[in-house]
Length: 380
Image 1 (cartoon, rainbow, N blue to C red):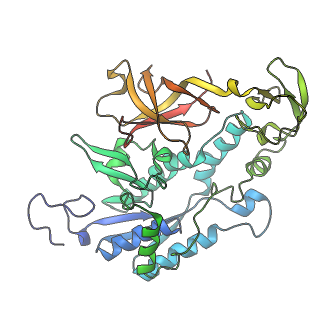
Image 2 (tube, rainbow, N blue to C red; image 1 turned 135 degrees about the horizontal axis):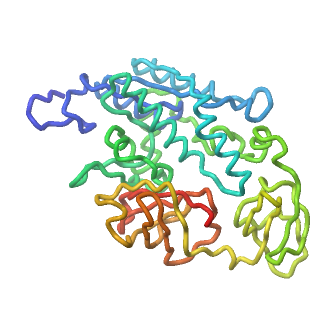
């Protein structure tokens, strides 16, 4: 692509020929980021692949043969060799543990329901890795996330992916405006994962049929409690299951085995009405249960808000928006009432069940497309 006319932009929105545009691609070893790197390489960009060594799965599970991180690094390297661009592996284990894993463990022990993938994007990939990309003189950094970056009237905007089933906006709400200016998401416009896999097959990538990761990367078998017990010995101390009045109904095997809204596996059968976990008290080691109506929440306190709107959050007393409390739930109408630039209360027009400290509340415009930011739910 010859960009010899003023104002012309390449496919990444930059005023340079692709061959003069350096792009660092964050490569996880999966099909999504591999396709991003392959497409950009074919288009003639100066691609540099970077894979982060974040965690030793074997250490997390305290058993041999559990590590699959080495396979992911190998897969990323093979893609780079196939497409002919350089690939580097950076050891971020210490950074990842301090920024993500320790907080994950401590939040669970405090009775919260953490979302470590958001913290990883916020504190590792879009912070340290992004700075590394700049150190490599990159013009931008590209990832395989399913989300769209669009230029609005005032600035770059964050929008949901075209494929709602793959949309990752919930996990990227804390992307700052400065980061968004530097980031690119080449897969966000695709309408199905089948398109991504077809592109991988087209380029002859070995990961074309590689299964998607279903778990948190450092909890590869989904057993959060086992990892937390390894990280925080004694975390699974037993305690009491009590009702809303404090009556003891049974014993539990550790607060870390329970989540807000849980019904099954409580071991307190024989009751007339079903009971749900409505509160976790790590200080007294009590799991508090109650009827379903006690799970409903209308007012949600938020902190650490990241705001991506066109005017400051505090420029209005109220914002009528759509919000997501969990990644798997559709956006629902709500009102944001700012308390400061980074704190607010959110009123849900329709109460939601199972709202827990440690989760994210993500804001969308009325159309449900543009991401306006979000914050972290905390205890009042």
